[in-house]
Length: 330
Ligand code: C5P
Image (cartoon, rainbow, N blue to C red; front, side, top):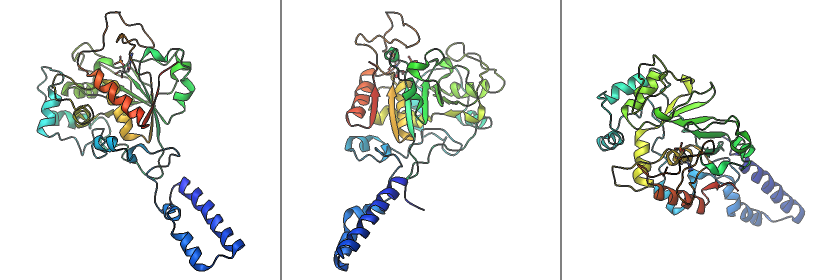
């Protein structure tokens, strides 16, 4: 297999330089051999980890990043990876209590009788340069004019109910992935991937039901019972991935908290993209959690079940180390 485009370009330039040096200066054979041995030439035959010009995220040699990042943890459930070790299952079950006593393995079987069971996005390599925009719902998007920039990414990931219509100039118009949980679901078009964030077994039961007979009408709250979405494009975040983000990236021991949607989506992007740009993240200094599409009540604080402080610090660290870019509005 040929090396990637960048390697090819370097190869052609270097080869021409060597040929002209040899022919113009009549360089003796041993000097030519020395030229061929230098490290730049060696680099020609070293395959790049991805095809992006700037950097390849997963291949970063940043020490802090490599301590945390685990390429081997699958971000999405598939037929072959759904079994959960006891400790992870127990942690996941503790996130949101429900009365459902359904067997996890049966629920998974039913899920994959409705949506595709194969693995996704385990395709990192020298010919891939996948750019991703992670679009949070912050009010800092208002007046940003980020729309065209967001739309220029290969993947545009949005969350929960965040609308696009009427906000295109600031938030863009494309959505390749919409990450939701049952209580935050909206109907999707045929081209968008629905990515379910399951916080309990009932959430997986809900997606199966919502794509078929619509028997589940309530999880923690009343939910959409029949969802418009392309079944072939539905994916489910792996509970083991959520546990890995919770313990490895946020280093949280408490059972009472778990990562927020935005942080999990950012981590998902980090594991399936080569370049990640982040938009619409950040509460204001008072901790108010405005959305770009609605004002939140003054009393609304983002506390509850997420460790906002540690998440924010981790996101800032990713930016400081130039692993992601954060666009904060103007
Ligand atoms: O509010 P909601 O959970 O729908 O927002 C989705 C994500 O967008 C959050 O988890 C958070 O990461 C991000 N967000 C933010 N600042 C806001 C609102 C949302 O960072 N003011």
